[in-house]
Image 1: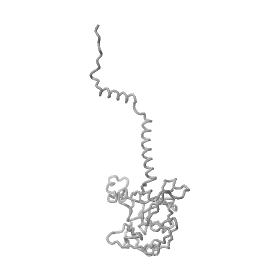
Image 2: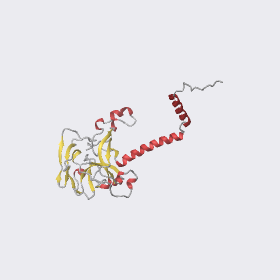
Image 3: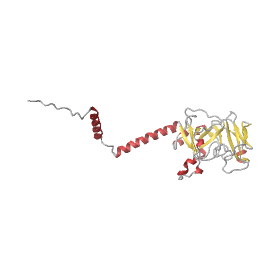
Image 4: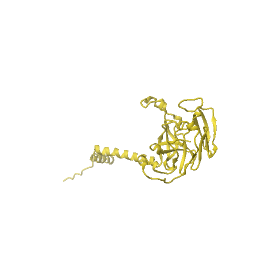
Length: 278
């Protein structure tokens, strides 16, 4: 009586056996149901939104420049990054409606310095975001006299720039650019689109900055709602959102409408992308 021994199929190598096993596992697992796919997408979106909000709350928040009050330093269509860590956190650091909470004070607070460009909530204008340059510190006496800025009785140094044109909406023969230098050495460019002939902006009362408040002005001196006006007034420390640091992106809306896709590349101000704000 002869014995027969079953021989293994030579065609099934270890590699092919592993492939068959993997295929069997995949087949047994089956495809994702529509509900599972939707949940998977929702999780991805939720994680992305959470990371974005975390960065926006605690580190950097993007803002766009809707008006020309900071010309020539910032232009309409600039998208800037605001550092929220620089001055610490208050309710102004949050997003609406949390910005309306009855909470005062700041965490990890450090004081802003004269000459820095600051984003703040204007409580006199529905808590809208404003951006201006810090001119007066608590206790300072600030006044405009014949278009010249005075701080604590001293005229702030300014030099006429003759080789550049002001970026005014309506060019005027009396429009001028000046290089202004604050007492702490911070220097920047301001423009006078109406010369020194604007009575409300170029000649003001004497402002004494209260404790815990700041006096801010736009670089576009004749076209800026700032601390010289009742619309803004003195800005409390708790209303400060953060310090403007860089231009992340810039687009000239006059060169391309939203639907004119073919003009988009020509509307981008490439030379301003990631410029520092100072």
